[in-house]
Image (cartoon, rainbow, N blue to C red; front, side, top):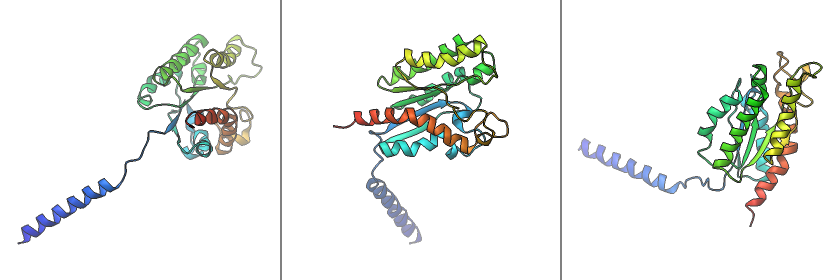
Length: 223
């Protein structure tokens, strides 16, 4: 008798689980517009809660434009362009609507040639477009933080981002750290990485360029 009761309860629970699964509709991801950010510590939010990093701060603004926008932050502290190139394929298994590329400064700190940095960034863009022909690319520019920047390397590094954006018909954030770099009130004690207040300023720098891009992408889906 006890065994029959146990079997009955097991069958009843299994049926309930099955019916529950049938009743709960799977989330429709067909309309999701993924915004992929590939960067380094400046986009990861070094020593901060990820919610305070600029990609998380622009996410609600994107959703206000279109609720289907979804931000994927693939940024890793210390990343170089070669590192980003290695990480990229695992993020291209799903469609990408907007791709924000923020890499290069760690290469510069290591003395990697500007030509090699640019080649890696171009390869990254090419791989994104090979999988997502309609993806809008946003190049996020950086400057090499040296006093009296007159050195040929420094100048070439700073110009590279604009040239890369122009060549690829991409949008350009001229300088991610504009208004933040060198300001002790907006940076951690290392004077390199923005603090939470600094990331709010970074979000503004990015949003000025990203907003019209997002509205253009959102309008594509309109009947």
